[in-house]
Length: 85
Image (cartoon, rainbow, N blue to C red; front, side, top):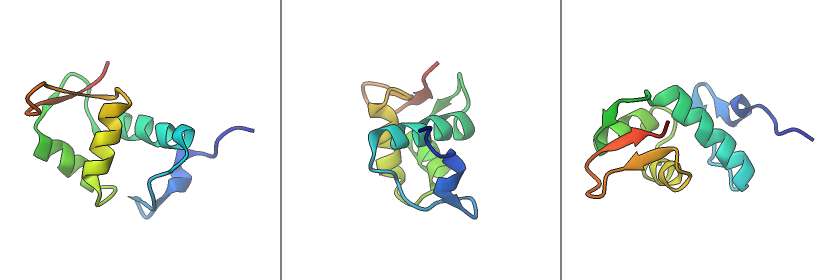
């Protein structure tokens, strides 16, 4: 059975909860990376947080999940972030 559409996780443009199931969370993270982060652009941590905060208050958790999933690349010193190609 296919996963429900990612838009079902949102209400009034806000993420209602971060999914616990890995496959569903990955679906959300793919969506966030594609819609909130521009390819080729370098972001500071506050800029990433600002973008993620537009959909959910726990921007730190979302940022961490994006990095762990390989969708957001972080410089070794943590000063710069880039969306993975």
